[in-house]
Length: 121
Length: 108
Image 1 (cartoon, chains in turn purple, orange):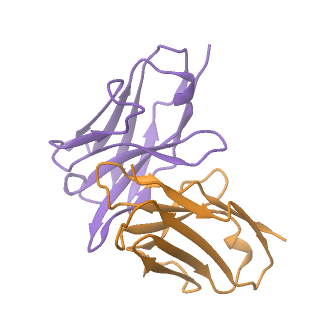
Image 2: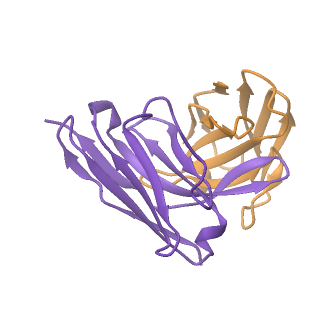
Image 3: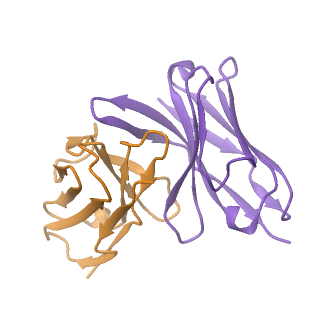
């Protein structure tokens, strides 16, 4: 069965860095676009970034552009998010999610359990 | 960015009730609209994709409708396990995916 398992979250000071990982299993990872989506405590969902199946196409939300870098290693079935220059407003649970394309757009059918990133001094 | 506005923001209902949640897009998004359910401490779960297609394994009491700018999620007969927060999400703008602010469904 499809599994997505995030890791790498934790407490970091403002201006610091953190690297999140997402280990995928149960499907052909290299066939799918992947995304990072976050949720601040008590708040709604915010799309952060996505990467195409080959890694050649990448987009970021304006709120993280220039600070975060998404990448993937298809040989290791893994997705990454390098987060630099972290701010308090980056505090959130970060989910990796598998993006599926259909007749009318795309959707996230599988999500990981999330990893909490807390940015605080 | 395409703004997604859900109403109501919160809703109280009883087991067995029929419930409707609305999602409005700031511009036409055709049928590029998905619905998710999220329970506390858990990841979101896909319920409906392409406005009206039921995700595999989701009970048939859930249904979605709409196109253009106005969409609805309907639960025909609320069950105890349905009390959760619901989010709509547009995928029309592939470069800027956006979610609604959420609708919290509580037990009356």
